[in-house]
Length: 184
Image 1: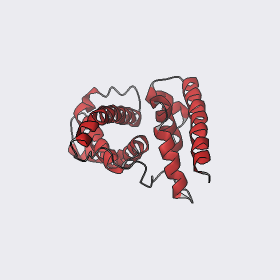
Image 2 (image 1 turned 180 degrees about the vertical axis):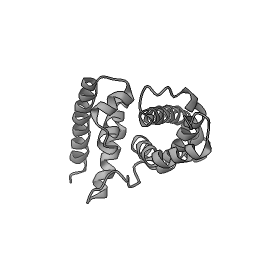
Image 3 (image 1 turned 120 degrees about the horizontal axis):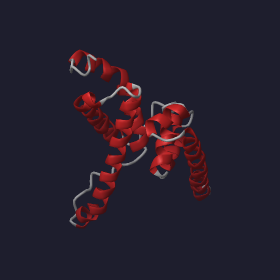
Image 4 (image 1 turned 90 degrees about the vertical axis):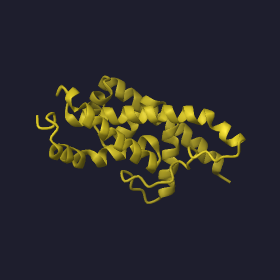
């Protein structure tokens, strides 16, 4: 295909087609606008470098989502590692830039009359195990079908149904404890 030959115009069209979807997915997973922008850029660098590995056994969009999810999970792992060493900076009195305020953004996929509720929901999503979080973000925020998510995550549809069921249960627990703690 044109992309495999590395035609820049074809790549530009690909970026225009997928940049919002990739950014929104990263934002849903990472909860931070700067991080989402950085990782979304990395995703397209990765796509550009590895387009020759795309075998066409799935849709191009599915392949790009897979790269986005894996880059987000890598970023989260990396950030957790850095956070563990963050106490060093604190003891030396230097500020840790990784302690950016989470969920202080408005996600384009969420239109709520009450943005506060959206922020609380996003703070709860962060606490989900990674597979539950991935399935939930792809379904509820990106509007992907269970079938599409199954392909992206390389799992069965019943596995996705079960992840979504557990994610909703966990979110209910997290949110009810949040609201109880904040009721005066």
